[in-house]
Length: 356
Image 1: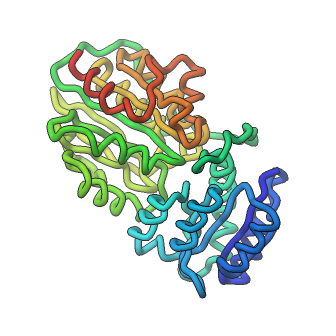
Image 2: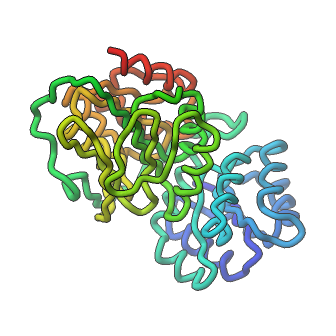
């Protein structure tokens, strides 16, 4: 049973969030608090497995409370706030302070929105329950409920099985989810300005990816931007999939460009890592490098195997450095990863692979 503490100054949000979460038999809301001070009293009585936390609250804002919590009693926290919808900088501050994921809460129609997105909310909370935060011990595995899911077949055909011959230019495709925002920063900020072109799928809601890319652009020697349809894939440039849209790699002659498309959820996600990886297997073959990083679920595992079968070099982040060892674990279990690499070594391995 995953024990959740809901913190929000709106009584209707607390009630709706409790109802949405407890529709899953594996989740129990142990308390609902209107502000951080009452939440702190609940935590003294029983430490929850996950906290959902609003940003704008009376007496103490959520970011300040999050920072204090991470210092004194690290618990996986999911931000749930309307501020993060327009003020995406708030989300980035929350991630840097230790939040593992985010749930959008619109400024109007909050209850209806939470009910409509109930599956994602429960999935985010389950993912958070498996996250390593601070010195928190490794959590026990949580069985995912069986669900009907679309594969990358719903967006583009499978590779034809014939590996593409090696050319001079390499392209790197990276997929990540829970814990990925900080993991991606750790990789990208140490890459040199002439690093190979990179495409990234990070599971994030709409409106966040542009601010996320802008933040990384200010920290990295490589140029980072939210991908737009038709963007060229160039050395020293990183393209991040827009939230809510699939990102694919396409080749024209000896050059690559990004394709951004709407479409169904694939492996329960849009953007989907499986879609990006399959497109790389089809368009780049042995000219590609695939990297799957921290995250819950199995999105990207099948696609990474397709990349490997097409001749690409493939890497998976190791368990010790993953916030959630779900996506890498599934890829490793399928035999999709050539190497299992700690987070701190991924950039070096990436650059070494492009020299071969």
